[in-house]
Image (cartoon, rainbow, N blue to C red):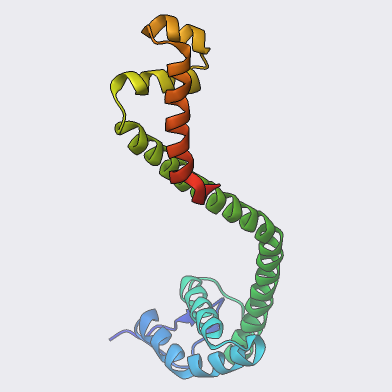
Amino acid sequence: MTMKRHFISKGVFLLKKIYNTFDEAFVEVYDKYHIYLLKYLLLLVHDFDVAEDLTQDIFIRIYNSRNSEITGEKFRNYIKKAARNIAIDNARKSAREEGRNKRMIPEIKELNDNFYSSLEDSFIDGEILSTVNDVLEKYSEINKKVFISRIIENKTRRQVSAEENIPPYKIKKIENEIFYELREKLKHFL
């Protein structure tokens, strides 16, 4: 069995022991220091979940930097300094995100208000169209055609009278009858 010295995180010699593989050394360091680091980060960030995430980030960085070396620094001091730096970075990132969110909240509120008002308007429009359709279904084809020509197509009574061979007073009577029923059905929307 060949014994090799494995360094962890920028060359800090791992617990002054000799391991066969870097992974064995890393597991030993993790087991020994992760609770210490978690408690230290908890003092810095005052949030257990964030402290846990930052602890994992530090150990991932340590694992990924196994080939670089810096000598003369004790491992505990190294991870304490790394924890402080990562906590500061996290605080800065949180402050930036909070500032960004404060600027976005009025825009989001406006978007939500617009969305819900347009959604409500769409619902009301659909209800109105459905009610108009239901009312018109009760009438004969000629009455529907007269009403649509007058109200939707904006034709005059004379034009409708000429097209449908109906006297203008009869057209007015059809309009009034349909309008009366529509007003009754739609009064809760007004």
